[in-house]
Amino acid sequence: MSLSIRHLSFSYNERELLNNFSLEVASGQTMAIVGPSGSGKSTLLRLTAGLLVASHGEILINGINVSATPTHLRSVGLVFQDNQLFTHLNVFNNVAFGLKMAHQSRSAIAARCEELLNLVGLTEHSQQSVSTLSGGQAKRVALARALAPKPQVLLLDEPLTGLDDELHDRLATDLRQILQTSKTTALLVTHDLAEAHTIADAITHIP
Image 1 (cartoon, rainbow, N blue to C red):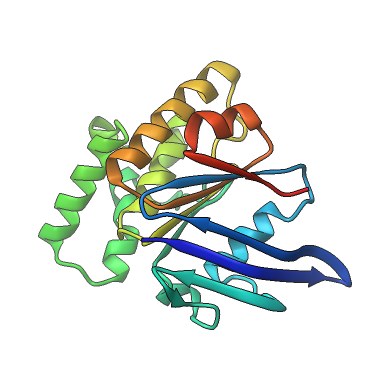
Image 2 (cartoon, one colour):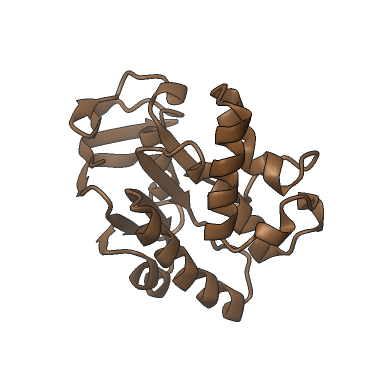
């Protein structure tokens, strides 16, 4: 599913964070947006997800204007910097959360969770409490949870923040493979140009 952002503008407290910003992400492509802190990268993701409303411009998913569509109807997945896992649930139930909210059958949920846990390399940890996971494992769970409902677009907000260099580099490579295998259309924001080159198919910059 393609993503088109056309002439998007947004201001907060009279400060302009985005001005007439446009980009195109082809179906199945991962686009990285690189820029310094405070440049509007995370704001762009929240606008795309419908968590914020632009003052001007359009957001189209697969050619359909979703600018006025509520977040829960946009079919957009979001992976946050801090994962935001449900600590009272185990790994399986974190991944299953969106599927249960969509009232899918138990068999469909089990099959999809098994598929995703295998994809992110966490099959053996399905019944483990997320509070006992390593930083890298937690980020894999967050990714699997976001992918579970098969979103048309996946948004990744500095998803590898807080990892040591070795783990960061390994997960960046794994993340690229996961996105390619799942044929996911994704928008990644990062301040790390090397990370962008590792994960993404294309890169654009916010000043």
